[in-house]
Image (tube, rainbow, N blue to C red):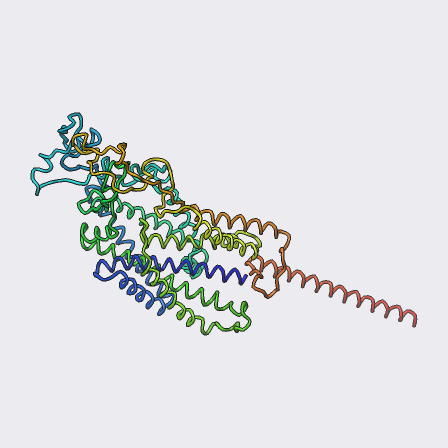
Length: 554
């Protein structure tokens, strides 16, 4: 119905404001670094560029540029990924070699680096200073951040909250993100636009299947670059920096425990650690991917607002003409309304600063699809899979999803770290510096090592307590329950009758239209048969009267 149509349009437009903003942040970060300009300036430059060619050519410009951008992006990202995987000596940070007076955690690491007996504890194995650091200007050292090394893949990361020990694992948030992106994307406007623009439904289906397979082909090799980037810019690299006023008992660090990640680490890897041509090609591919999303978002928001909201205003406000938006001015209206939407997204991108480890780009993308998962996805499924979808059920589902999502957003505990309060020291937040003593893995006299059990040297660490993700999953579940319940209540007819031309009258599905048409045809045929039969009976009666009159005359 019209009310549900407008509600869905508002939700999806709100979602795509965040989606566009997230992609503008990503493009702005790359252009800001490469061109040495402010992030805000890079964001506005990106917005103006994408807006110009999108509004000029509409869906045709989006389709043609997306083909070129996708081809360049896929090839660039895949080529760089396979090159790095094949040529990098370390695919992930190895066990830390350490530094003078560093004590190795086990015999395997000791043998790997030809360790020597420690001075203060002959039973322990320490860093070989003579081999690795013969002089101050000729040292091979690191920060001791990976005593046992890092891995490219942690195979139980999605099932075990403690798989990343001594670091925490956001397993609940990771699962929630998968569901948000997988199902929320079904209501994405640009995805819907591409499907609807397909020549046939079969072509749309084939296109979706191919795109899904290509996502794995491109995404899986590219994901391996995360561990390779940590080799060059991770906590064990020479470029690493740490928060001085921080301690962590799980890491055994009384101070300088909190690593401060470099937000531009991957861009720096592409511009400094790989061949310039491949790094530039990959950066072009990333920007092209963002541009293909941005142009689709701008086009979709303008189209939906003009076609699905402006066209229906007359039904809500009698003072507005119902033909305010028509076939003649629809395109102009879509182009015009795209201006404030692009400006709004650019403002969000410019002023939003995220403290999350995901950064502004990743978090805004998740928020975008979180909005439609909570509000739109359940009615979308109901429209397709219910034989006679109820407008009232859809309305109640949307309201329920929004209310549950908003209420849980402000009532669930959230400290901003996206980590549930699991047990174990790895789920303790960093505390303030606890002591000036040496960590336990330093080869110093034992009375100079940090003992966290000593009063006055405890590391006070609050436990992480962030239930982000639970609200994202609870909202669509609540909406689904309400939709099914109202749909069941109306199984024998609507609970309430609405005006035939009102905003709550549901649209008819293709099958329902055919059924009504067939019913009308059947009714017409029955009426015609009855009319013919009555006419036949009348004729027979008239003939009988005429025959009887003739007999009487005879």
